[in-house]
Image 1 (cartoon, rainbow, N blue to C red):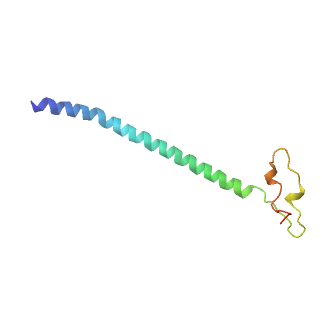
Image 2 (image 1 turned 90 degrees about the horizontal axis):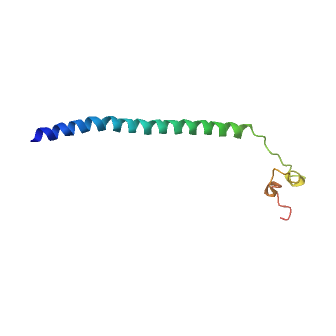
Image 3 (image 1 turned 90 degrees about the vertical axis):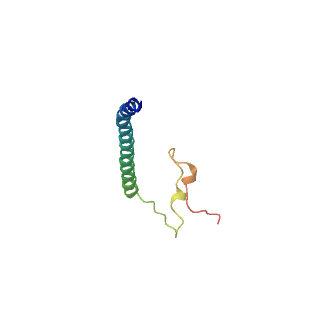
Length: 86
């Protein structure tokens, strides 16, 4: 009476173990892919940060970004760093 139950459990286990291993492999592959994407994007951000031009402002004559009007690509909040009223 116990033997058919054990055989059925054995066949069920032989079917479910490969499925469980494939799910673990799929999750691992997804994690490795996202980790590589994160590494590439971080490297690109570092390269972009070190290669973008620096903005220089002459504080003695109060000339710099305030003298320039915003272009079509800039918003007005980037027109100056120094508040002339203070």
